[in-house]
Length: 216
Image (cartoon, rainbow, N blue to C red; front, side):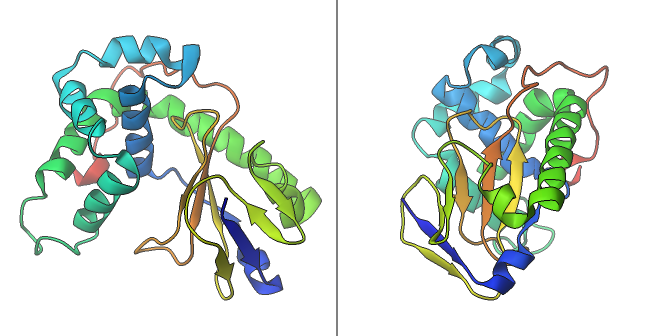
């Protein structure tokens, strides 16, 4: 299990993501749908969206190419302009994920955003009252904080956070027993650690889907 080693400065720079990461949340939804995970909390959502063409196409792909890290790398590269030149069409996987978002995630986004905000507010209270030590020590049963650093599930070597802090991000669709560490992101310095929120996870569609996500 990788260890994240902090300095006093990087611990001070550790923060909670201020708003939901729509692309990663959509990838977590895709992984949950493809793997059959998530338990009874999301069963109604799975039945509601699993038959839709946008879901069937990507879930079959997700059984061969992992949403993390494979599809994530493809989509982030395309989204942030490191792939096709400006004005070019996104790659097929990015386009398919866009359609998946609009069909299977956007109708539920109002509830997702509220649930994430409640969790974020609770974590901010922990941060204010108990500091970064208290926050990191209470994230997830499989994440362990000690004087040696933060131990997280997964593969790969240890990370030393010398000049950057850790960005901590709650997730609605991440399965309860899982955390995801993303070691490097193009737009944010330092790694990101996603953890599942603890409750309020049964998705209920809003009257209308959110417009404008993924740029259109």
